Length: 501
Image (cartoon, rainbow, N blue to C red):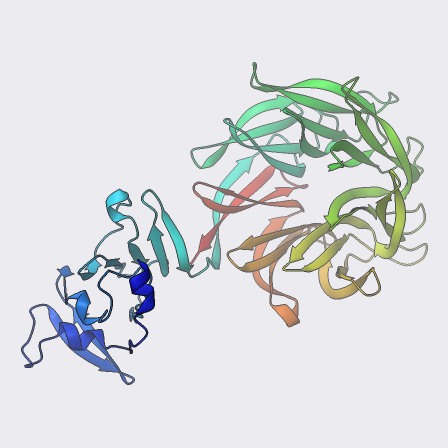
């Protein structure tokens, strides 16, 4: 607008009832339109597929010779609570008319630039930018229930699943199989299901870890035994070949009953940590190793050794400018009641930050909810020098306290020889699912999904029957959101589909 407009702004406007402008004043009825009133508010109800009710904009903008750049219209739409009707409303503001259109999802082209579309199915308000609909207000997705989706029959029991994407190729699942022959399998997601893609020779594989360095993609396997009895145990790093579209052997590293790999980057340098569980003679007090990528030789070299006790898992995470590495220690040679440790990166190496008493710890899971940082441990079982083993014990969620600069206990959850936690979110809701594997008498147990409920912490919402559950993974695809679990006691993994409201 020009300066003359600014000297006489439309500041004398008052709230206006649009219905009084568009409905006949003499009480005449309009075809397909009915006047309704509820709770002190009145409105119109449409009975025909499309209605256009208009009035001149000059009645609104009394002192505005030009159509204003900005103005507000408040509209109240009552939508019946029913899943059967899927109406969509389009609010269109143009130079002279105000349209309310009922129909299917409209196109978003230059002609619809600036139009608003209200989707009652998703309960969202969207704005067209000339090419795409952008969400302005939308009800978030909510987890309704979990549906059995795919049975994935494998050649052996599976101890771990690693899910990863290869650009322009697709989603993959690397399965760590117990049996040496035919080894471990890699599956590819194809048309909404996993299909076998590649077999790789492994030796009682415990876990896979996918990572990238520059443009190269790698996949490391934790082998827990040698190729033959008495031989050195070698874990292997594979590299993705863009030419062959397969993983090919790249580097071998000597490990000791390796249980887990963890990859991470600090200051643009790549690292790989292995959790060594025990030596060949059965000593569980052994060094685990942090390797560093050498850009010159293009191989991993030893950067640091860390004393561990029956290490099962590494978890790397970053909080602000600080980098942490947590180890789950499971057994010190006499008891599973041992300290697991959290290390902090200082001066080019990991230094002890905090020790936490755990009971046969098998997994750490770090997650954040808003600005709160949590660390959940999966406790496997309680074994002392005297007395029976206990498998029904608490696993614990810790929260970082910024005042004490320590992880403090937040919540205990009863688990049954837990071996894995998986954190995931659906819309604004946050969940933890635990892999319950054994209760002392049976491997057929319910693994449980817990939902975050603020002050109450995590509460159980879904119980999923599993057999010797060893791992949970959450993933999304074009077809929806899923949970996948592996069984250490049966040659069967399962995919569940999350049904979203």
